[in-house]
Image 1 (spheres, rainbow, N blue to C red):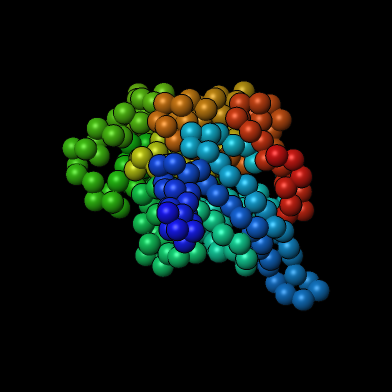
Image 2 (cartoon, rainbow, N blue to C red; image 1 turned 90 degrees about the horizontal axis):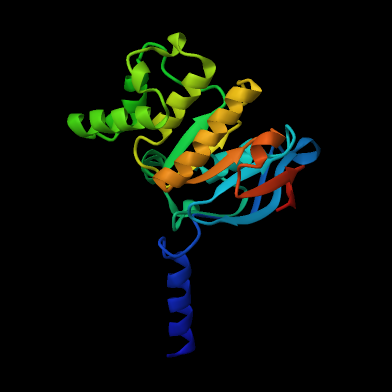
Length: 243
């Protein structure tokens, strides 16, 4: 084997979605503004997440957690650095391809739940599958399965306003799993919940990672919840300070 052939083979192995990490972040930089007033949200961040891991992203407000989640989820672009998700480098994707990546391979859970008020719990969970044009019967079966998974099978017809905060977040998690994503990104998913409910939601995420075979990156500042993660990555002023 020649040197060049060996190099190509090595690269192919690293970029093989089945053998490489779920997420690879390399020397990531992101700033907002310019000149003396520029805010450096991320400064040379690098890490990898193995498939099936639940990673907690820790840091104070303003440390760069949300910026990092937005970049990994393809919602924003870095100034410098590379992001690879499930074997795909994000920088090489057009807007349509990024949209498809977010729809089909990444699930998002936000602190504010983000449910559609006029839709029932079941209808909210089904929205991503409607966008994907999933067949009606398959969609209904998946919705029923997911609501059972998050313990809300008996609340399928209720609207968000009729559910508690913890129940709404469970619906949001079920919706994030609708299209069987490879990666689940959660930004302070327990931030609006009391301690007991927040712990229950984090335990649910832990169970989902195991049961659905999903990789998860979860931003949280709750020390009690950090213990449920496989690893903790701590950010401070846009840099990793503990890994």
